[in-house]
Structures are given as structure tokens and as C-alpha cells.
Length: 200
Image (cartoon, rainbow, N blue to C red):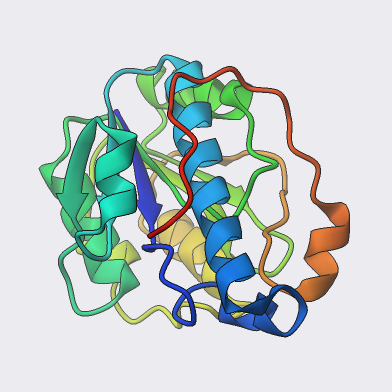
């Protein structure tokens, strides 16, 4: 199973660091496009079922069809742990900020998990990670993490190694978080049946 974590494309409340360059509505439209792209990538990977886990019920999410689940938890770690704990494993979580992730990356992660590795991470250039996959799950890898900091990947990797889990890392990727990242943005061609609609 692949789980896509997404924020609703609400102007002024999403991609706020990009608002100086794109404006509030432009940043929301980018969030919507990133969400569609992440879903298309997950579907194209053909690794099992795909679920969209959103931060709120929103007409844009409804327009995408498929299975929608509300995120629950006090912070990102609690929400990811809950999603993985309730999922049919092995399961993978990706966000919407990394259009560089390809279906081949997701297939490789799933192949490693099915082959006996207990966890897979895709490190991001900013120190976080763009993908986490698990064959079994423990709250120890999600509690007390400084989410959004440059230490997220390193701390998670340290905890996995200390716990003796067999895990592997995919290639390092980059996120679309800051205005400078927009200059690197190139949309891979991934066919998708998802309808292209602007956020409401």
C-alpha cells in the first residue's frame, strides 16, 4: 500500500514560504498540482492500494476520487505512525513536496520491504525524508522528532540502526519548499486518469 500525505490547497495556509513569489492563490494551485502528481506517481508505481490522507475535508480532495482518510494525531510523527499502524503492510508514506520521486523509486522501496528489510527511507537534501516505508511499525521512530528540522533523516536513521532494524536508503531527493526550488521544478510525464481541477 502507498499512502499520500497532503495538505489541503487553501490559499494563505499552504506553501506559505512560496507566497512572496507565487501569491496565496498561486501557492495553493501549486499545492494542488503537487498533490495530483504525487497521487499519479503512487498509482503508476503499482505497489498495491493507494490512499490519500488529508489534513481536512476539502472539495479538491473529493474531486480526485479514490480513498480519502483524515490524518489524526498531535503532530506529523503521530499522524504517520497512526497511518502506518492501521495500514496493510508493507506500506509506504510519501508527501506531496517531492515531484522528483518516481514510480521506480516506490517500486524499489516496496521490493526491499517485501524482500525482508524492515524500513526504507528516501533522504531529502534539506535533512528530512520524502518517503518512509515499513514492514512493521514502532512509535519509537516517530516520537520526539523535530519535524521540519534538518535533523529528521539523521535522527530517524540513527534510531533504526540503534534498534537493530534492517533498513535501506533510496537516493537523495529535493523538496519544493522555498522560492529557489521553483527554478528546479520540472514535471516528469506520468499518465494519470486524475481530473485536473483548480482548488476551491
